[in-house]
Length: 317
Image (cartoon, rainbow, N blue to C red; front, side, top):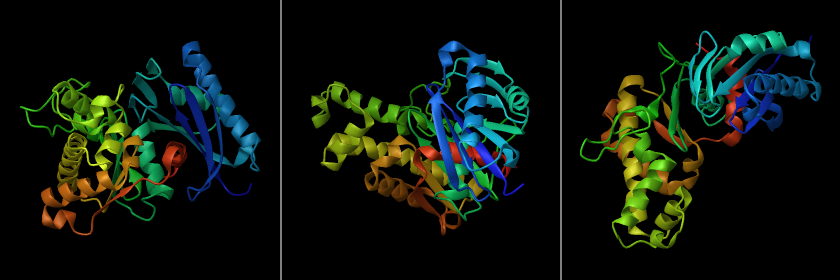
């Protein structure tokens, strides 16, 4: 039958990306098409099945060589049962995606949340290749995360392991309410949304900053201003890095990972962010828990999701 290959599905609100990987996590081929969210659940699931079949047909591989299919989805789910409880991006509730896709495709299907599969992708063939124990942060609109133990995703009791953005790290006097309902979550200060909020608040207070001249402040504007020496922007980035570093210090004495990987749009800021995160991690982490530990940027970019999803059939605990 030839070598086995694995299909990964990155299910987003506007597009579905599918990828074909070999047993070593090498991405062989991809295809991307519209999600069709507005047309309903049935249409989206049929689109996934069609895109997966097209991906394989257009590749040098036969359908019989596909050893498993994995899907990464943003939302809350019952991972062992393959059930999406709630996906706000898709507007889905209580969708048995695993069962439906297995019926449509005749292959084993596994699911997980998007941050977990991104972490698995980086662990398999990205910035964490060859590192068995690592933690991945994804900094975007929110803060996601994934935990890799002995090369496999750790999902926890209800699949909530790795929800790093909802670690309560901000002191009460500074804390604001998070979308999850708690106050002081990491996500409120270290996501793109949090960085933009803090910058806008400084402008509204009348602080002297070049950001006051920006009509619609984005996270990139804050980083660009910081790189130009703007004190308000520097303070904003420093605060985001402070709580990231402190959260990593806390994680380090629970899991003792060898590496922290930081991905997502915010991570593209480069050294101005990473240098500050490392500074605070090494300042707050317990001596033995930080020994030999490094903090590096993710390397797979937008491919992390499909690579990690493809790996669910090989590297899940």
